Length: 462
Image (cartoon, rainbow, N blue to C red):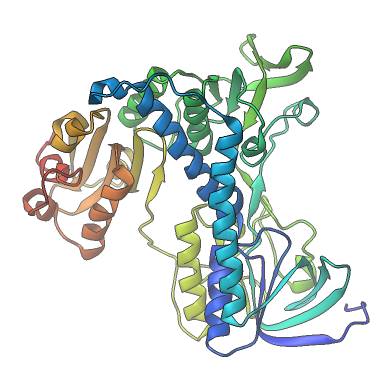
């Protein structure tokens, strides 16, 4: 029930939350001459720009340079040991972020949308009341509504964790020092990127994960190789162990483990997944239902249980990548216009920005074997690629899985320098339905990392 006393404003499109999908759809719709209100509670440009992909990759760049400087003699240069200045690191990161936030804000205004900074809560179907940053109120109803409120870092229910003042992937970016001892709870892609980053900055880093291996969805040969490189870079990894309790002591934070051991750290980073931002949204008033974890329930068209109400990005349970959110925008834009675009059978790539990078698309070897198909597996050490030798960066392993009967590329895992860039070549071939021979025999420029695909698709080990 609407009880604020404010008149209801009707618009063509109401977007709640300004993540990648929502902001792109809002701008497109406004440029088409329709009325649009987008309500965002604080992060202009969304999580990616402010606290996730962009700032972390800016810091990854700094960490990589620190490692290169420390080993520059192999390239004929004597640079000495790099000095880490946290103030300069933060200035670099915040400069990148502020430039992108300013660009996004300008694009919002130029598009003609009504961009509203404030907290939105549903009070009826397709209708929100927005508590404005200046204290005012607005009530807005959309002919179509898109929910794009994203996620926040998850804190697992470990006794003592909240009281210990642990860090998340967001708060660690505001540290004013490099901790001497850092423990990372979680061996997923967020935890591993920060672990290697802070090791490069000078921290003694330990990663804890309750799974038997890091990145448990990946094939063992890939994760074992990556774990070895992390150890070379000073990251200790402890798998198959869980944290039983966390206690703040005078000397730091003590983690009591379920195997009876304990660790003492100056800081603890919790990288244990993310929770949807749905509590307090009033979704029940909108007729929108959530699953057991709080993510908005959607079908493969990203439609919710409520008419003309959609959800996109992380909050809809989509894979938590900005490029997936952008594709969610394409899906919803077409479906709002009366189309029937689906999220089913999307070929989703992902990249882990450790050093070396791990980039993957399609099926792992384990997944491919589970389908019962007759497969072939190729493996190529990165040191076999000439470009890697010129970079003096030969750590890594490339792997491909193909259908033996049809020649179809089922998936690749590329662990090595510049892998995130090379991955798109393979993904494009998979989109086009090209057989592996197209990459084995294709004319690829020398010396590039992508040239390694010629060799990979002839390096059969199974």
